[in-house]
Length: 198
Ligand SMILES: [Fe+2]
Image (cartoon, rainbow, N blue to C red):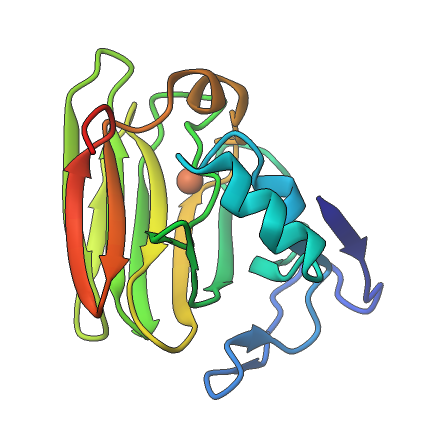
């Protein structure tokens, strides 16, 4: 992961505004800019060899997240713009790592701004859900549900999210468990398959 902390310009104990650009899918002066390359996605795709080939071919960006440094406290609201690039790894669509919240009983709302794809969700008990994600649609991720976005389109999938200030992120449990579903795109056809099946 590459994480850049930038812009000291905004005082967070006072109201502030943030500029964003939907054409490019960015927050213009984020205080935290996270960039996940293909090499940071090891262990997430079914076809590990295809991922290594992609890393060798230049290690392209999988997704970026733009945030402000909001205090991780009850009463605050975290928010971000995320941009997941189009592409496939052995036929499996580019996606985010996915996470639970470190404070599990915290929800999140995602609003799709551009592109198309799915929000995959799962509970630690294994129950899963999959919501279509495209402009005009938002997705509610209830407390305790892990979540990941998947880009099935040909352009970046751009979303806005907001969640409680104290929520934090837990990537480790999802990395161990994986998601029950995988999303493939072969010859232009999108398929959602059980993770254990072909
Ligand atoms: Fe989240």
